Image 1: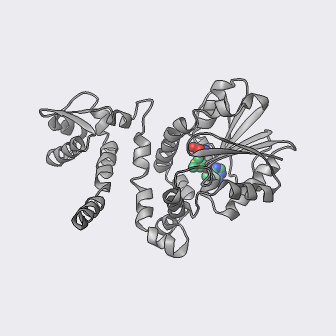
Image 2 (image 1 turned 60 degrees about the vertical axis):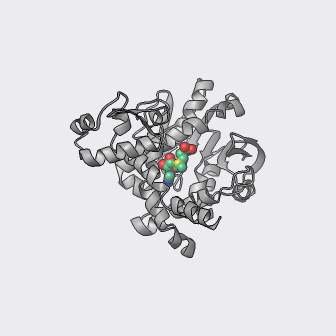
Image 3 (image 1 turned 45 degrees about the vertical axis):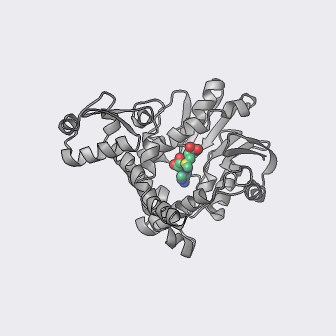
Length: 321
Ligand SMILES: C[S@@+](CC[C@H](N)C(=O)[O-])C[C@H]1O[C@@H](n2cnc3c(N)ncnc32)[C@H](O)[C@@H]1O
């Protein structure tokens, strides 16, 4: 038994090697290039790689179940086809997301545990979203990753909330617009406004969605009676959350509606401690309970109206001004 435990631990220490191999393959566009079976030699010619080391990676991916192999030929299988960039169901950028700055921040988690501060900020010298805005390629990769997750996470949104009762809706911190695309599909006549930082807004072109750029820490324009804050508040500490909520409150007319969509730790059976540690390392934040979001909103002046489940993880908290 003791030996079994020790062996289990020894394998556990290097479990991340498989993910890093898959992520490196994404970075090298290997899966994109293996939609048709190819040999290592053929890939080397196309992508200028080291043949001996590429063969090691291809065999590792095959043995871990991420590539099919026949003779000297490798090909994507039913899992890795989701790591091809132009697959409409792709998770390529979601895969890449966790292997760069996130992984570095996790390496210094001990700093966050000692200080309560973001290890990301300590390492990179600026807060996460500032860093993204100063690195356009990183910004684009991050938002593509968020969009890939969002397409799954928000697919039931318009079934759960009837947005047709509103005249317009503004998604504040809406990224590449997955939430509004979902709403627009069900309620094409609703005016939809995407609000995010200028560097993000500049990259989005969704027909029939109005774009406004700005920072939710400065001012949110009063152009709608409905605001959505989805997976925004969990990025910030209580002080910053209060500023965002105050600006939402000021942007809305009386009787306006605020939808807060978050993973609420008290509403699900899954333990969110690891996700909270990730938020701590990246942004000095954490996954809150619904009661904490409700209190923060009430302190800004909002009245809690009701709540509804969006999916296994996320809850929609509905407030009125
Ligand atoms: C975790 S992402 C959530 C994106 C999207 N709402 C979703 O659920 O997939 C946080 C979003 O907040 C935006 N954001 C960060 N700082 C901002 C600021 N100061 N003003 C406006 N948006 C900001 C980011 O660009 C990003 O789109």
